[in-house]
Amino acid sequence: MRAVGNLWAIPVLCLGLGLMACAVLVPAAAETRDLALRRDVLQQDLDHLDMQAARNAQLLNRIGQDPVLAQRLERRQLNRVEEGAEQVAIGLEPSPFASTPFALVAVETPSEIPVATTRGGRLMEACLDGRGRLVVFGFAGLCIATGLVCGSVRE
Image (cartoon, rainbow, N blue to C red; front, side, top):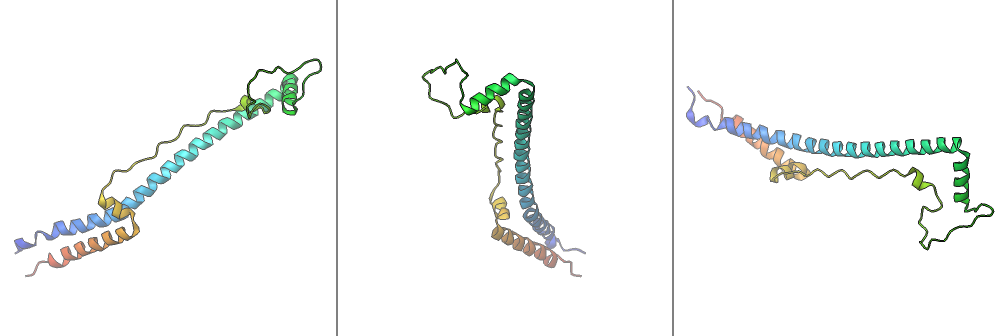
């Protein structure tokens, strides 16, 4: 016949197993979330670079097909003025892109990906900290040992 006083052993054993699972799964979930965020950032950067490469290839094709555009870009890069023509002074300060064809191939920069925030308590903080995780493992082992040893049925 089982003693009624040993019923507390099952919840203590479950508490120990739950704490041990938290100590293993919480850091793995945090690392997975961080890796997914990094993957999203890298994918966004790759998409941006693909768009930029496509725009650059489009410009190179246009330069190869349009000799007037090639001439204009050459003059612009070398700051040459056509014979019989003169530059018009507008009164504006020169932009850093005034002598480059950057404006022809510029692609807007991607928007920032928001940083994921975590809602967690002290247990989560302890599981993410190396020393705290060790304490959680120790307490979980103590709970499991207590549940197994003190909850045994003596006949």
